[in-house]
Image 1 (cartoon, one colour):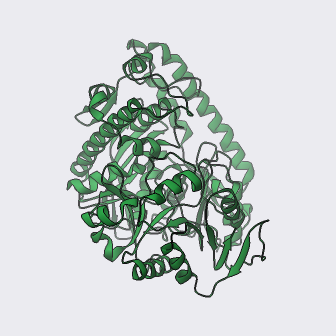
Image 2 (cartoon, one colour; image 1 turned 90 degrees about the vertical axis):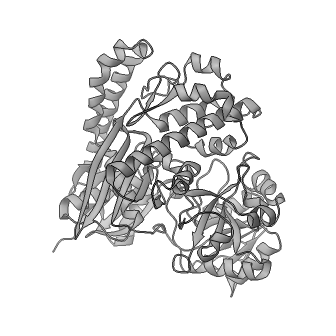
Image 3 (spheres, helix red, strand yellow; image 1 turned 135 degrees about the horizontal axis):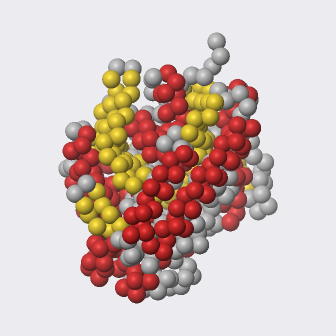
Length: 569
């Protein structure tokens, strides 16, 4: 019997990625940037697809379905908005350029589908509605049987915010759309617009603005942001007089002259960060939190479920997600390891398999380590000029001792994790025992802004000693208030707002990291480490041994543990 081979793709936009299902079992998933070295890679994910097919022992001719994470036919629905935008003075000048841009994207999508047909001549092409792909992945990753699902991003065809009720009924999975908000009402668009205005790259550095927000006073621009992003009974709306109507072209800015006059001039990326920038970031973040809490309350009401799955780019706002978890709106909040567009490669594949078989795929729930591994790796004594490698017999104990001595060490082990957070397989680790390590990490290792915080990883059964969070956080998705113990003894993991974005670890999830934390706890009294991604600013998380060795050479890391090899300068 011929196997059903479903290849899910996120391609040709940003965060290119691929996932492979064989007879409903997830073989793997990998983001292209981790293999081609280009952050937020827009390429067709050639490296990712090649690895997946080799992993499964298949060829392109064996692929039976290619599931694409957008349905290009739905872009044309934007044309129906044209009369309304022409009637509104604030959006009139952009109405026709907007309509033309959506038509252009539709045409480009048709060309992309023809290219995919040529790459996979025996496969059926299945475009998948973008938010459906997000929603399926968010729900399947949670491992629960019944949940509200809330997707909040910049744009998927025309939708920007959707609320679903997902549930399992025997072998079947039911995913009901309960409410949708269409562009131009887009929280992701608004956050990206202000991010760009503040001098950072939208679609990449929104997390920097979230961190900066803790240093500012939201009161200065609170009224302005409330006008720019207005709450409505069933969601929110965007004021085009402040945040300009979206046109799918980089030639069109996102903030209006009125917004600039009311806030500050655009900040050049290399310019100093002033109090006005922090205040604007604070007002944006505060409004985002208010909107997300409002949407979560609506999701609970529309679904009747006490569990909430979050997806879409805005779900990466760990402060907002953490506030929902703390607010008592729902019992638990689940965010998948790759809530952004890359994860829709899994969601698209899941949608295609569900449509084919009537059953959900398996191998996704509560997992994040889906990518390439390098077992049996052998290094020469000098893997790079100036580097020295030696094999260890007890790597976890050796690493724990070095971290306790104050060293900052890269960790490269086992399968590559999914998503934007380092989750212990491609990490930079450091002891959180003094605040000086934060300055050193930002200045000499990561080469990023000094106000950026670092997240802790902690043994799950000890997490309550350090953060006030009443649920697991295995994918480092939720910011939570810290305890007095953390504030007094581990200041390096406390952000200015008194929170930490926690990763909780069990021995079942990650035996090596659990051993490391236990040993470090025996030495220092605290089974807690700083865990940040194995990369420097502007580069993706290291997906290959060569990328990891380059990171050691190019940064202020003291050492790199790559599988069981200890590499030093």
